[in-house]
Length: 247
Image: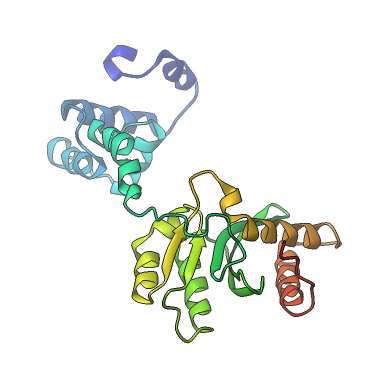
C-alpha cells in the first residue's frame, strides 16, 4: 500500500487508525499527480480531476491538501533549491558603511514587538548623525508595505535625498523591486549588511534592543495594545528628551 501511494510507512500508520477527512481526497490527488509524472501543480490537478474523473474541487482545497501531504512537483523543488539564492543575489547591494557609523546616512530595520501572545512589527529609519529616528511604522504584518510606508514617510522629511546612503540588512523587504525602485528614483544609495552579520547594522540593532528593554522591563503592561501605545510614547521620548550615546 505504501509503495503504491508513494508514502512512508510512518505516514501510513499515522493516518491508518485516525479519521482524516482529507485522506480519500489525497489519494485521488496523489493518483493524478503520479500519472502526470509528478509534474502537475494544483491547478492542473484540479482540471484533471474535473475533466477525467468528473470531480469538482476548489483549487484552494487541492493546494491545501497537496501542502498538507507534501506533494510538490519535482521542477518546483529543483527551482526552490537552485534558483532561490540566484534570484536574490542580483538585489544584494554592497556595504557602503563598513561599520563606520559616524558618517552621514540612514539605517533601517524591522523588529518584532511581542506581548500577551500577540505580535506586531516595528519598522524604523534612524539618522546616523543625530541618532534620532526619521520615521517609524507599526503593523501587524511584516511585509513590503510596512517598509515602503516607513521609507515614504521618511522622504517627506527631506528635500533632496539624492546621494543619501540608506543601510539595511538583507531582509526580503529590502530585496523587493518596490523598495529598490523608490530608492533609485530618489537617488538614494542602497547599502546592505553582509548576510547573517547584525554588527554591520549595529546602531539600529542597539536602538531596537534599547526600546524593548526600556518599555518591557520598566512598566506594568496589561495588554498588547497597551504595549504598542507605550512603544509610541517611548519613541517620542527618545527623539525629544533622551540623551543619545554616539560611541
